[in-house]
Length: 302
Image 1 (cartoon, rainbow, N blue to C red):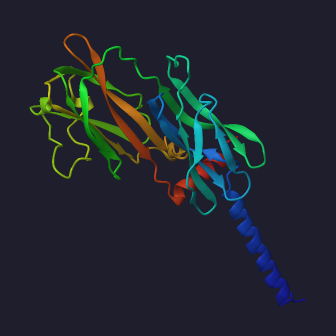
Image 2 (image 1 turned 180 degrees about the vertical axis):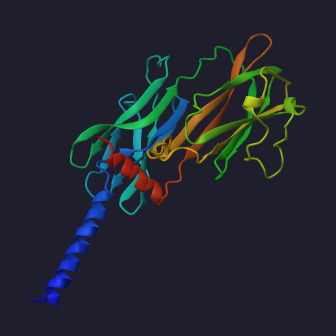
C-alpha cells in the first residue's frame, strides 16, 4: 500500500523539526558562563574593570552580579551583543567609594569567582579567571621620578605610556605578573635615549606613530639602565595571538580579557624608589566559531 503524500510531507516535516531541535540543543550552554579574565589593577577609588559572560537567548539569565571581596563596589550591566544562540554581555565593576574607612588591606585582593543571580531567583558562584587588586604603596614623601606625558592604544592590540624623568635615575627592571603560558602572547618594549646605541634599537618617537610598539624588547635589555633628568621613557606593548596553541587550550578562550598594570621599576642614587606604570587593555574578538567552541567545551565538562 502506497503512503499518502500527506504522510510523506508530515514525516519530512517531523524529521526537519527533530533535526532543528537537535542542532538547537547542541548549541545551548548548560548555564551562563563568564569568560576567563586576567586583570591586575590598583585597589583604590576610581578603579573599574569589566567582566564578560555568555548566556543563552532563552532560559537562565544573569540579572545581578555580586563580588564578595568588594561589598561596596557598584555593578552596571553594559550593552549586549547577540549571536545566533547566545548573548555576550559585560558588567562593569567600579570602586566608586572609599575602599574602607579603616586602613585598606596590605595584601592584594584575589578574586576568582563572583556570585551570579539568575532570573529564576537562584544564585551561584561562577569562575571568572583571575582578578588581582593591589593596594598602592604609601609614598611617605612628596616626590616622584616621572611626569606623565601621553599614552594611548590602537585597534591592533598595541599601546604605550610615555613619561619624562624628573631626576637622574636608574631603571632596575620590569614587574609583571603576566605569565608566558598565557594566550595570547604579550610583548613589552622599552624606548629611551639611553638605549640608542644598543643593537636593534629604533626610535618610536615619530609623528603619527605613537601607538606602535617599538624600541627594544625588555628581555633584550640589560638592567640596570641609567636615564638622565629630562629624558623620555616609554613603555609599550603588543599583544599577539601566536595561533600555535592546541585547540583544547583555546577552547575556553583563556584570558579573554587582559587589563593590567605593568610597572617599570626605578630608583635614584640616594635609594628613593618609584615606578612608571603602563596600562594594558585587551579583549578577544569573539567570532561565531569562538562561541561554538566555548559552548562545546562547556557541554563536555562533567
